Amino acid sequence: MKLENMNRDFPNMPESMRQMIEQEIEKQLAKPDVLPGNRKAGRHIPKKRLVVAVAAATLALGTTVFAGVLYGLKNNQVGKYAYETKQERQDGTQDSAVSAADEQHYVKIQASYLPDGMVQTEEGKYNYRGGRGGVTMGCYYMDTGDTSFEKLSYNVTEKEELKVNGRDGVYLKTALEAYNQSLYVTYPEEHLVLEMLASSDISKEEALKIAQGVTVTLTEETVGDDVMLCYNWSKYLDAEKENALAEESSDSVEVTFSQKLLEKAERIGRIMDMENNGLEKLPGLTAKVTDVQTADNQSILPEGMLDAEAATAFDANGNLKSSTISYIKKGDGIDTLDQVVKTEKSENKLVYVTVEYTNTGSDTLTDIMYNGSIQLLETKGDRASVWHRELETPATGDEWDYVVEEGLMLTAEVGAYDVYGGERGNNYIDTLKSGETVTVHAAFAVPADKLGEMYLNLDNTGDTESALENGWMVDIRK
Image 1 (cartoon, helix red, strand yellow):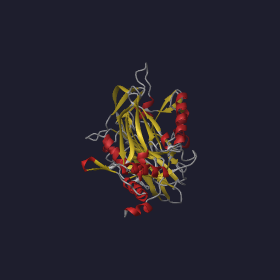
Image 2: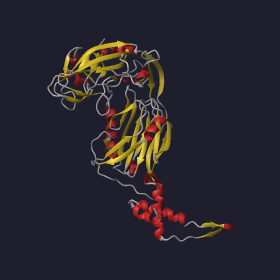
Image 3: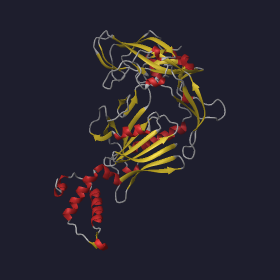
Image 4: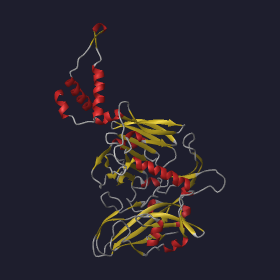
């Protein structure tokens, strides 16, 4: 392409951007040449050539790189362990609100690289099959202006300002959290900021490799495997205020319900009506738990049931590993970090469940999502609640504030399972003809001292009380 033709072929750009490039090129081209003997010669640049040079310079830079000149992500340290991530405007540029707070913006987020064993589970979410962590992505649409992006991160142990596909990015690693890695990447030409959260079992190198393969584009589509609604920044700020108020008014996150509700739990071998157990009705669908076994070794499982990630829950002899319990004293996250005050081991049991799904209706059913999660329901007086390790509180004194369990695999919803279907090859039954039965096996790891409190929740929403009321919770206590 001839230089003279580039100005007509170059795409439109904001006037402020064009003027900024013109000023910079005029300044550069106005510099005198240095001749032999330190003599200087001035230049005269025709206006047409200047305009063409603007186009050529911008094409050479690329709009993404140039956008990074206008706006940049910066990390400002607050105290010893907190960092404020901000999007800053460079001199000579202007910032403005770009949309109304109620205007919706959809983006298509696609990841061209995922580590072995990681699959897409929904829009912007990628997880390992065996219940391990993964990566969650989302984006903010800066409806209040690009430079209003500002996030304060606590307990930061590592930070880096970097480039992701030529864009400004900030990487942060925090202490003692399951998803302890954050990456922010700016898309100022679209008024977007990408947020990627990665779990602690993913290395920094892998997290950055995933990020380098991510593309984010605005779209008019509102549905699709990779399409998601961008979170308006104004809505995020409102939600932050509401969360702060909720935390101030709440003493505990524990939810309790009447112990009598446990009497509605189904028994092993009973047929359950699953027609309304999902977003869409599935006429005639039933489920029956036919068998529950416990073991210490993976030999109880069918060959090939465990993928590479789930297999890490077992040692070289196939025995289920114990997990590490850490008791942590909270710091303020700014000048002091959370500190582990003691650790202990917790022994686990492998729970192997068999569930039969049957179509008792007259029509063929397709794309049947099934679920299964172990819920530990403990009782205190006339109340019951779902037990979580992190809800434990110190018996006396103020020794520790919260608990973290590490190394306990296969605890996630559906654990490991052996029937795959649907578009993503996960927990779906592709087709179930009238009168046909499909058998699903699932495996979970449960604390050994909690086998007397375990129930199997087959509700697709995961809600405990709803599952009990509708007959989708099965008593599998041992």
